[in-house]
Image 1 (spheres, rainbow, N blue to C red):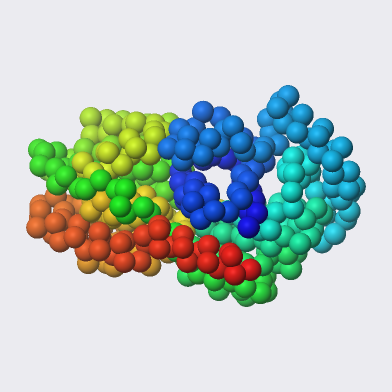
Image 2: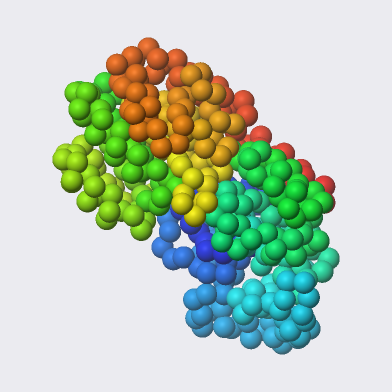
Length: 392
């Protein structure tokens, strides 16, 4: 099959599942093209090097001599596609970035795969205006069915619904509203996974300070502010701890200011955005990983954070919240600890329980590894997903 992976911005280091799907498609023998409406340069990941993605992928932005030459060749070879950009259909005319991608593709794709609903809209426009025989697969993750819908409404998804051949929801949380609001014909729930066999093992650290790891964008929905509050509570209880925070984002400066205000500067180390390998190494050495996810003021929510799957596959104990699809992954008190959103005291309680009870940490570690290997292993999940795609 000829597969086109369409991305809005690519490659995004936090979206390792996209790279995983691309690598799996290539390994399965599919003729695979990767396209981005906006190329992000200098991102390091083994799959990028392995598949030489920077040398082979198509992109619309930034405009440079490399893609201009491909667009010019496409104008000569596929004049009908240029005309197709001006057809007015349910989703409107193709945008310049979508036309650019369409002109650079030298074949007719069998399936267009788009992660996140807004990228799915672009995929649907490619089908409407350029590749009417292509099947479209859209994978919905969280923001695209929460914050995006709160801001833009359901109308654009309703318009694209006739062009979507398979809608994949990474959590049960989103499947019902998509079915109800858009009338998409083929909506399924399919969990993402992580490569369990490639994960290091938890090293069960024994340090004076209890080591807490946070990995994520510094945005409201990741709940980092509530980790700061929990750390202040634990400091008052004389629990010796240290937090390693990996990630950057718009709220980073305000979080650092809050930490200084609370007198917790010595308890936090900020690493910024780092490579996947760095994160896994740090994860294997932490006493626990925390994901205090919340529903943001604008309605933005998670799906099931992959970082939780990775920590559990390693065996690192996890503490998170009853948010979106997270309870579909973590069995409370068995494979991890869960509290309600924004429950700072409850969050602190869970961390303290782990800090004072190594036997509990060991039990959670064993159960977490089993949980992910049983239901969230990437090899098994990818096989199921691509069997459905091939069945189209």
